[in-house]
Image (cartoon, rainbow, N blue to C red):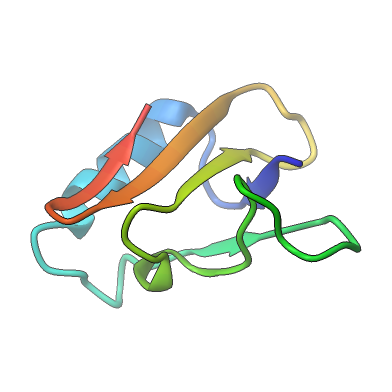
Length: 83
């Protein structure tokens, strides 16, 4: 299931925030990823702060309630990647 991030009007806004987030995780720029599913998190699901995303984890996110864009956030050893 797709997770939700709030406060981003576009995928570009999300990419800009994540770019500013690195190379050091800035707590002022951290954001919450919520999992609306009532079931435990699956492969592409996560609930928690973006900074706590485990290395190697990929999460598919969208804006709520419009769902006008989707993005995949991946935590790598070098930082974060948004596609």
